[in-house]
Each structure stands twice: as structure tokens, then as C-alpha cells.
Image 1 (tube, rainbow, N blue to C red):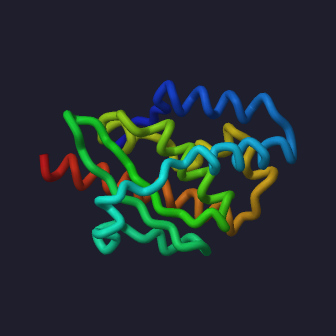
Image 2: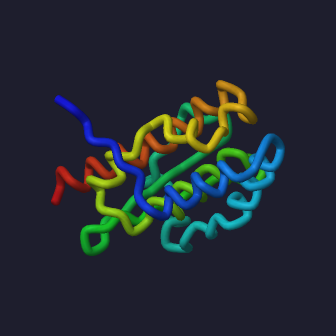
Length: 147
């Protein structure tokens, strides 16, 4: 079985932004995304146990997903003390919120190579950021299966 791969337009724009910068500038751009992460909605603070913990990350990373009118909405809880994974999660949220679950599932797990992040992040950090997308895909799959 062949798995289709696809990068939605908003995520493709983010990839292009990262392609335009070199070295440490990639880290600065990731930190800018970290600062753009919206706070966790208050209603989710009371239901933190319903969020999925991304155990592969060194930092405590949690993700929650909803389906609204056939489109995914992701919420993340990542401490500010973990700006790299927080930036990556924020970037994924910006790039994938509002997409159909099937579209999220088609995003290549290693798309960050197109951004050049492997040149500025350690393999351990790359494993963590790969895991964030894997959890997002898993949550999208759950919504497809329950629809």
C-alpha cells in the first residue's frame, strides 16, 4: 500500500521561511514560533488528563485535538522553558490547524529536513519533534475512525 504524502499550503509557507535562513537564524525563527503559541484554553486546563502526553520528548509536552466541521484543531501545552519543542509544536499548529484529518495524516514525518532543522537540532531533539507530529497524526486518525 502506498501512502500519499502532502504538505498543506500554510505548512509549506513555514518550510519556505526556514529555507531562507541559515544556521543560528533557524533557531531564532523557531523561538519566534515558540512565542506565538497560544495559551491553553481555560476549559482544557480542567481536563488536562484528556490530553495526550508526547512521552518521546524530554520536556512535558501535551497535545489535544478536536474535529470542527471536518477540520482539525490542535491545542498544545508545552512549558516556556522548552522553546525548541514549543516552537515546533506552535509551527505545526499554525501549519495544520484547519486541515482535514486525512491531510494531517499525509504530512511526511521527516518534512523538517526540508527546513534544514537537522543542521541545528540534535538527533534527540529531532526524535522529540518527530513524535509531536506522530501524535497529531494519531489523533487525526482517531477522528477519522470515529466520524
